[in-house]
Length: 253
Image (tube, rainbow, N blue to C red; front, side, top):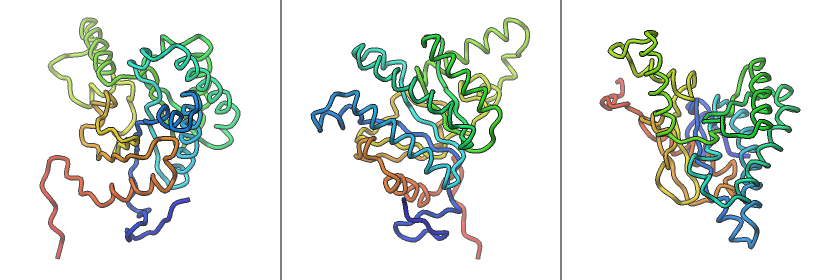
């Protein structure tokens, strides 16, 4: 487990200054497996276990939301056997969640275009949604068949249809009103976006929502991203001043 303190000392997390919502791009599963001479599927399996552990860790810390990028709209370009393996892992994960999420008090929500998934997966997702509706507390969000630009287009089309039906006024649209059309409707924007794996880009992830998120990049491959690595991201976040376009606040004398 990580090191905690109620004061932000060197190498320690300040429990009084935690982000409400953390987003993660789970990068490096395939490279992790290749470095070990294993099939890429082994990397995805190890990455799924890291997600499970990190979700528990966030809940124990008191973070309200964890959102992870599991499968993008572009990931369908990967070899069929790899895609099939990822979907099989997801199916296994959903069966486990259905058995444990109410007992553990964990909510689960999926963000993305789920219409292309198999009927079996959609049925399992519907079941997790129903269970989540009876639970309060920590929520994990899984971005599945998700793309930031696709999400914005999806929202714009839905808003346009409502305008055509006379249910919305285009001239009265606000950022808050548009946000209700996004897959993430009802969620606060991420305070912190973490990308392990060495890349320094957001890869079409939560483009609208991350307008004022703090970014943290590291070289650690996702399956090796431990609780201590997460602590480092939190500490980096806690040493930044979030001004949201305003000026630095002067300390009161």
